[in-house]
Length: 274
Image: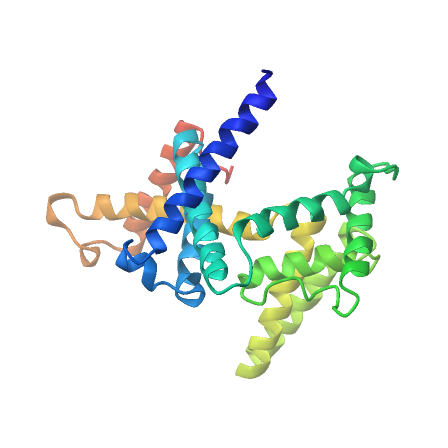
């Protein structure tokens, strides 16, 4: 038996075992908590487990990633089981539907379509989706529940595939400057409603500039937040030495602690602000 066949058989055995476990948990003699869940009640857990998986990926700890991906899979299995119990579909339908979609949307792999690069792949992907979902708009597939910055980024990606985009990086950079000027004017006029509107325009333009320079803005902001959290934790530790509080320090002294946190990152090779 070759390695690929062995891996496939092991995966099928493990998947079959998981199906039985989920079925047992939801059965009359199973777990009261699992039996009580509905598709609606599980929604927060699906989001939470996804973000925990992202944290695990950032940690570069393979065992942690494996565990968190399992937790995401658990949510998928529970949703599929609930649907099966109501006669809608089962996990096999989910997997088979995904397989068919991957084959249909990759004709350059599973058929005779020729592509030159990844941009051709994306354009073909959108054309195929358009034929599959003729009654839906191009942006309908982007969830409204996505974080705003990520949603803006994905919108820009989608429409760019059909040529609706700034011609170059400098053009979208100029748009950022334009939106910032309009935001400043709204702030000066103390127009709250317009300020909210213009701030949204600035953030949307920033998301598109990020896209043009090859940066995922949601990921960049998430990493920034992690970095800020780590540095502020260091400041807190410095403040609390010998039972101190923030009231005991001036802003300049707190800034000194902050700079020390940045210096510690540089020494460890984890600073990206240089």
